[in-house]
Length: 219
Ligand SMILES: *Cc1c(COP(=O)(O)O)cnc(C)c1O
Image (cartoon, rainbow, N blue to C red; front, side, top):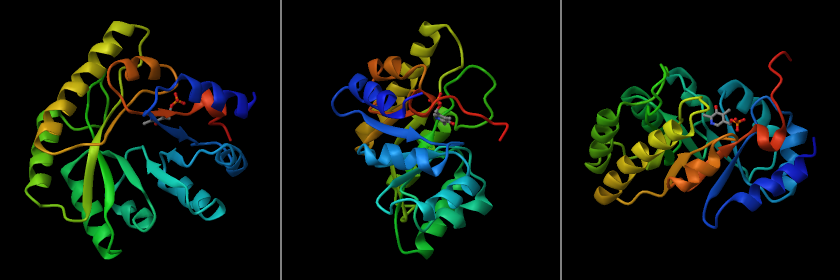
């Protein structure tokens, strides 16, 4: 598995203006450094513990994105350095991020994670909840949080039409909210479905295994 070749292949498939978040979870610091050396600056991790172990060992200009469900009691560990939390999936977590960012006198970028998969996915806001939270944000309730967009994961299925429908659902919500206040980021698509996501309007994709190879969870 040649990381450099994988990385270049993915980069070549991305339209101009589509951001790549390289999802490095379970992969060693050496692999992340290799991709960084190819020019990649944005990396995604899904566990706070793992991110905290890797963070001190890697260049400080990496923009770290948290992409996994975040427990409120762990926000404090990443509040000082996290660039974007893509997985804001409850009112509680937005309030906590706001509080911890305030302690460090900074603003943390947040994507509202919306439940679009029909499968029984545990995490994500209902569309109405996301709209409510965004309205409260517009009203100035969260001064240390910048809601820059939305994140969604499609159902894990071979049915491309279903995946497309789910992505288009989120695109519609994105367009609606974008009318109320300008948004930057629609994060949809992973290794298996990012071309569909881009077709449906994603301007940020989260790609892991297609760059780093398969994840080994036994280690
Ligand atoms: C692991 C993960 C990805 C990347 O998955 P791949 O299939 O390896 O590209 C993207 N988004 C989230 C939320 C993830 O947890």
